[in-house]
Length: 195
Image 1 (cartoon, helix red, strand yellow):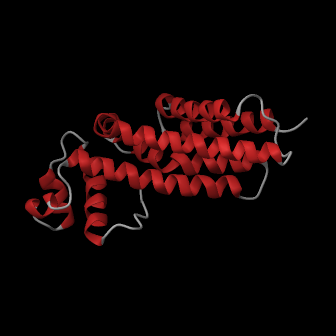
Image 2 (tube, one colour):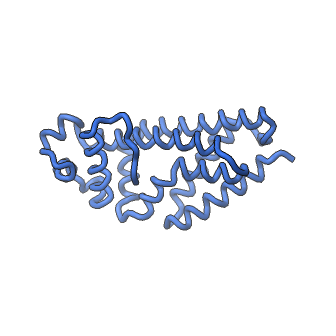
Image 3 (tube, helix red, strand yellow):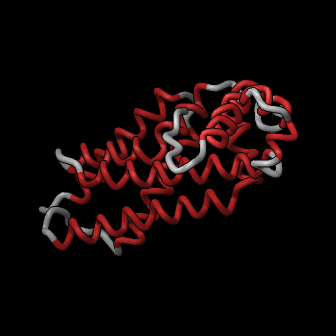
């Protein structure tokens, strides 16, 4: 998974990049601060000047990921194409890179499960931001007459995020996940298209 990490100093970028590589290679639990320090080419004491522990590093990764995903999600929803095409692009922008990393790394699932303990509040803040983006988009599209809402926009947004989360947890591989996301975009595109 590659993140832009804009706004971070180069050392923080290096630390987060090395941490993600170590987590994917060894798993979250087995990755040590020494592993991350080695990956950055700095000493462990120098690493501690930037992050208190590996939970703090994981929280920073989640924060960076959420910011980038929100930006990409807004751009996808504002893009060109059919409703289905924009929804598919939005779903891929929101969770595609993370799920691909999770389903293709031998330690991906363990990293994300351990991360729920380390960064549960940060993960929920990202989910809330995604729901808000979908809800705002649904309201704007309905006001412009481009979609027909099947219920309150906040409830539809919650359902979208819950469906994506369900696909993530029930797909055994990335190809299966992608097929499910395509199906979800078709279903929602059809349901929201004005009649």
